[in-house]
Length: 151
Image (cartoon, rainbow, N blue to C red; front, side):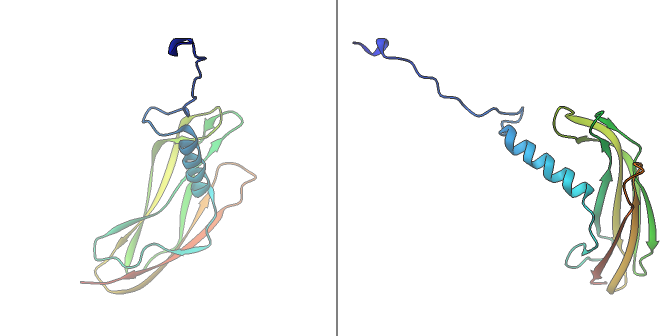
């Protein structure tokens, strides 16, 4: 029996995405991002401390109807408590998001909430509400506190 007569076995390599990352890792990351984007958070601090003019993203919100794989209009964000020492900024746009399953990446309306630090030092508090298009989804009420170092 020679080496060529030996039975050949094939090792199965894990499926890879375009970037060479295993598909399971990409899928888990997409699920985590989707949960993060839709998970209600009662209160949080954006970051340890900000210097004047620094910005931090507080949240990015979008909505996808998974049954029909369709992105809907961006969620409406209403600022319910304006910060005294900084500025709360609401930006709207369009971005592709991973809906998971058979849907893949779907372009959908996105709303991003940012905080920009002012010149004064101290603790700043703020609050906002996210209203989704789906009628059964209750509005999310969020608030936060930010420490500013000042000049």
